[in-house]
Length: 291
Image (tube, rainbow, N blue to C red):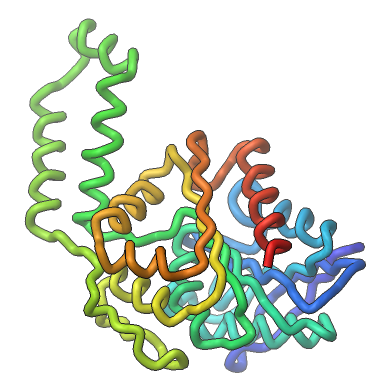
C-alpha cells in the first residue's frame, strides 16, 4: 500500500508525518522516533524509511514524522529532551488515521531511544519500545568506553603497528590523549543509582537529573516489553553496556522488566549496511509479533 504524507498540529506548530498503512491493520502499530542528532524522518542511510516499509508490508502500520524544528516541520528545534508534546501529538494523529489502533510501539535509535524512555511511561497507549544503541552519554562514560574499546582494539590492528614501525606514531600525543581520558573517568564519574526512583508514572522526568539517572527512572516507570539492540562496533552502545553492567540499579531493572536483547557484533551506530539493517528489521518484526 502506498505511503501517505500529511501535516498535523503540535502546540499550534505544523508537523510533517508519513503513514505506511498495512493491509492487515490490527490493534498494534509502530511510531518511529527520529534520533541521532539533527536528523529527519528518512533516517541515516534511509534506515527509517526502509524499516517502516518492511514492518508495514508485514502487517503493522507505521508512522514516522519530523518533530518541531526538524526536517520539513515548522517551529524551533528543541532537541531530544523536549519532544514529549511532539510524541503525544504524533500518537494522536496516528490513531486518527488508523481506526482501531490501540497499541503503539515506539521505535528509536541513539537519543531517540533516550527520548522514548523519557516519554513512554506517560502514555498508556505505548505498549512496547524498541531501543537501538541508546544514548546515555556522560564525559566519564564516554572516556571509559573509549579507553576500554578503542585503545585496546587499536593495539590489535595491523595498521597501528605499521604506523609505529614506520616512525609515524607520536607516542607523546597518544599517551597525553589517553591520560586525559583516564582523568575524565576519575573526576566526573557519573553512574545511575537507586536514587532514580520510579515515582509518578504520569509525571515528566526532571531535567535536573543526570541523563543516565533520568533514563533509569523512565525505565522503572515503563512497565511494558522492550527490545534492546546493541551494535558491537558502536562506542555509544559500548558506553550503554558499561553503564548497565556496572550499575546494580540498572541490572536490577533490566532483569525485572520484559527485555529482549540482541547483540550484533558487526553492527555500527546506524546499522548502515544492508545485512545489518535487515537483521534489525527481522529481530524487530519477530519481537512485535511475539507478544
